[in-house]
Image (cartoon, rainbow over all chains, first blue to last red; front, side, top):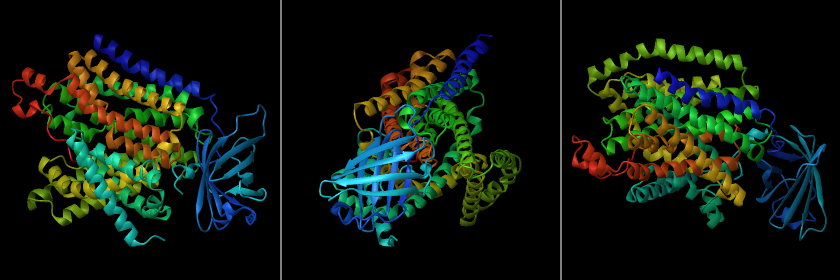
Length: 153
Length: 430
């Protein structure tokens, strides 16, 4: 009898805890997924920005996401550069999510419409040695889950 | 495209680092596998990439990671086959209710704490492409893992295999591994089903059919391998070839069913005939190549994905500490309390807790799967890798602290003098 009570207590209670945690978590919200590879809809003009020109243009933007923290890799034909940043704090009722990242003398701002599974993004890039802002639209070519662990790209 | 010379250079560098750092860890009384895990991190962006980014980029260019990953996956398939081969269902028999209680509690308590921890981690380290249920089940599974192979080696070195502590720990770890892999297979299937890779009913129905066929048809049929082994007196190349083909076929099947190739490799190892000579001979033929050549590639590939820079700021380090505390509380605490409730002395129960808390390479395998299928983010992956390292590092000193070898020898007259001091660390897989 003691064995049954001990077993029920030590196994049953944690199992009930698993059920309770899973129920409690159903209402939780995580930041919107924007990880993956994003390709410009048209090749952006990088002539005014030497930092981008050195990359040989901009082929795509790779985003590795951990919650609201982001690592972005701008990839060109001749190289790549890494920026770190994150999703901007949520505005109640916002229909556009903002991204800000910086590194290597570049600052990237982007807006992602919608709160879930958005596949288009408006990007602007500025740099200390850039004559102006490089702006372009990009669309996602690789799903968020495929973006995991690819920060080295 | 990468050249063959790049791959060969990578393999050489990885083996040198892995053996050198592994040896260093053995010198300080740690399992070699911990050193090899650390070697992977040293070769990745956390150390080499930070200190010599140009060398790192030329040694491990992004385009070269595909072939390296493929080779490391082949090594993992062989390793999981060996893990399955080491499991013996007879280990559970006759261990009484202490083993049953300890094994079940050592799974459900860390699993429960893992899902509760997920409530905190999900909004901070995940995103809405992952459902909370999948995320929480994965964290629970990752918390429940015990490195069965390294535990078996520690027990052998300490001559604890026939001691109640060793017997209960070994039986519990065996049950833990099988259970954790089944849960993980379910999580992988659920994630892939949500990505509409394969309908869930195909995965579930196919998996039930697969396991049924393996247990009811393949296992009896495989006794032919044992008969061939007895007739030849050794594992011939033909016999080894057939065995490896079975492993590959099973891994291919489970991969296509959506429950991951490693489960299939593990399954073949678990159902092979348990004739000791046969198991020993097959292990001997496969183990060296896997341990010396292929597993270090996996460690290196894992290290290349582990970026400690992602654990950025005090908040992130506090989260890492919280993950480690929860992991230790669940596995060490859960196993210890269960063993005590099962009638063991506190010292023995504590020793079981210390042993069960070893996560080793098995945890790394699970975490890589989680990262591959997108259930965990790169930052959480790094935090969990650090947890795996810390819990594996603490196993041996904690065991010595709780149940010193000298005291064990005094209490167990049958233990030889060799048991008084910890033997050299294991070199095998962990």
